Amino acid sequence: MDNNVVDIVTNLATPIVDAHKFELVDVEFVQEAKSWYLRLYIDKPGGITINECALVSDEVGEKLDELDPDPIPQAYFLEVSSPGAERPLKKEQDYERALNHYIHVSLYQKLDGEKAYEGTMTDLTPDELTLKVNLKGRIKDLTIPRDKIAKARLAIKF
Image (cartoon, rainbow, N blue to C red):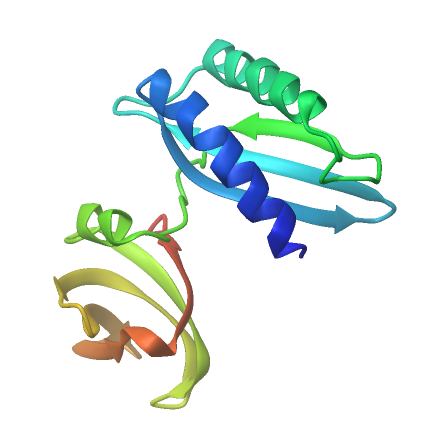
């Protein structure tokens, strides 16, 4: 992933998204098969609509076209969408909102023999979070150091 593109687009899109009272949840620039995708995930309380996504897409696309030199020399598809039900947890505010919700956590290295856990986040500090997890039929509180978390997101419990 080209972090420079993500940084440039984040800085360009944030004031546009903020002006509409939306939240910029995430920006990613990824190659899938032979195509490049610039994806912006936006949200607001109560959820984002397709028309609101189109509005942000138009405004961000216009601003990107004005940049010289072009920060993205290759052809790409611009997609603006909702982060969905399994929204990523990136910022501190995301973690705080997810307190007492069911989440999925992927780790950089194994903790108690596993690299991924799902459970209800019952506690959150600057250094760690606590998940109430079901391990082989037993409910257990698992404390995870936050610097060991590779990715976290809301999860749907089945």
